[in-house]
Amino acid sequence: MEELINADNFSKHTSVCELKKNHTFVQYESRKPITFMVIKELEESYGQRTVCIVSWYMLTAKGLNVQARFPMAAIDGQFCNFRPIPHKIFVQAVSEMRNCDSELKTLDIQEHRKNLIAKCRKKLIRMIK
Image: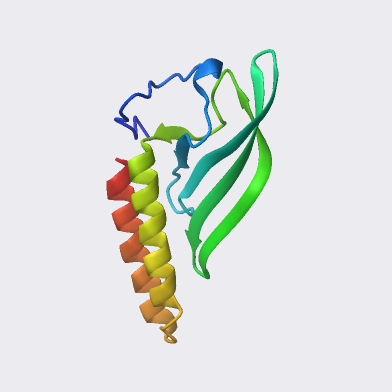
């Protein structure tokens, strides 16, 4: 995974002071669900560590999985295995995952569900590259 992001106003090495509410990130690993993350609140800073309240969004075989409002630490302004992405891309990705989730609820044949998830995953990968 070389450089995933050509984000506006984000550098590859984000510093602590640049972390702000509503900054968005992505974690992409082959054969695993793509995880999108948004900072909801900045809690506390301890030197180079910043504790943030974040939410994760990912599309799994069961549909959209949202892990809302839990603490996560950033060191030197970076989250382990997450890369910054523009907020606009994050919004588009979450919208795409919600659309896919609502379509999944109407499908009862497992093979159709797998195909829909694969199609949505490809769209999400194109968005973040």
